[in-house]
Amino acid sequence: MSSLIFLALDLVSVPIGIRVGSCVLPHPTPPPPHPAIVFFLLVIYEPLLSCAKLSADTQDKIQALNAFKLSLHDPLGALTGWEPSTPSAPCDWRGVSCYNGRVSELRLPRLHLSGALSPQVANLRMLRKLSLHSNSLNGTIPTSLSKCTLLNSIFLQYNSFSGTLYPVVSNLTNLLVLNVAGNYLSGEIPGDLPKNLRFIDLSSNSFSGDIPKNVSSGSQLLQLINLSYNRISEEH
Image 1 (tube, rainbow, N blue to C red):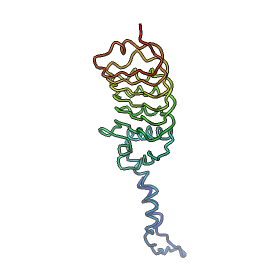
Image 2: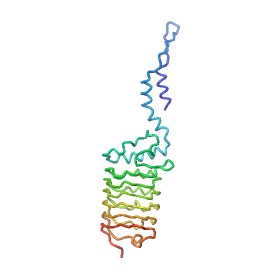
Image 3: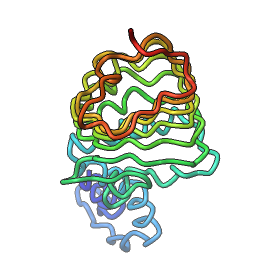
Image 4: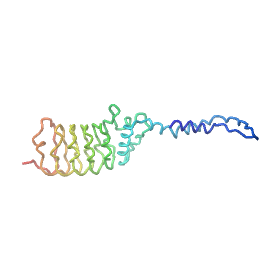
């Protein structure tokens, strides 16, 4: 890409001969290009050069996060700094934390974000913590999130999510904390919740049916279970 800049500059300064009969008289070499032209070319091509240097893996993460951003309404402009041209994109973006260059946490609570949670978040396969609580997110929790098998903490409480938890959390074997309180989730509580869960808060939703045995019997690892304000009963 940088060759385009030098080519453009060469086109400005290449000498042109003047033919007189059978002779070609050299045309005086024009002065160097005006600094404003050089600046303009750099402004145009520098972002492209930055993007070209990004690895394919980094570009995939940027695309996933941009899809997340584009699916939301952001009245506070919290995500305006999410630009591929930032020095360490996307690891220097607000709410994004990385480990060894991979996105490991996405934390954007209490920012008045509204809209649906993009299924492309699942492309952040190294994600360990997802915290989007206390916003106005709606729609279903994408089932593709089950592909983020390294997730250990999900904080989606106090939004407007609907639909069911199954099969979103069933495959998240590393999950320790699940908080989806204060949404509009419904259906039965999955009977195959991750066995390593320590904190479960499903309160203030519309879950129905019986409490699964793996919850009612009380795993030794479980430290908190909150199922209040639902339409569920203990299994007989």
